[in-house]
Amino acid sequence: ASGLGVIIPSFVIMLAVAITYVEIGAFPAWLEGFFEGVRVAVVALILAAGIKLFANTKNPYRLLITVAVFAVMTLTRLHPIYVIFLVVLLTVLFTPKTKDAPDAH
Image (cartoon, rainbow, N blue to C red):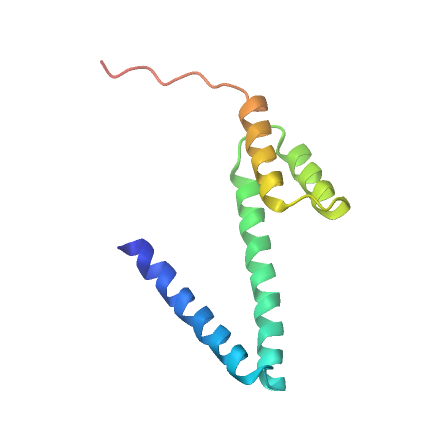
């Protein structure tokens, strides 16, 4: 239920924007300016989340993985989902194993 509370408002907004675009054919200049501002805000939010994730990870290869992902994303036309799968695979393969916590038994 809480997931729907997060998803439904975004879905309704995007649906309204899509219907408006189909009906009008183009957005007014003020709305184009609004979307430019939203685009900048979204990039800033993604960057902030990435920095927070980078700072909180304990993987010793985090800098190497970050640079490699940036290089692949900027220098190739590889779809981002493949990059995500590759990062997950590399992280699983190269993250040092930690000792399990002692059992409470």
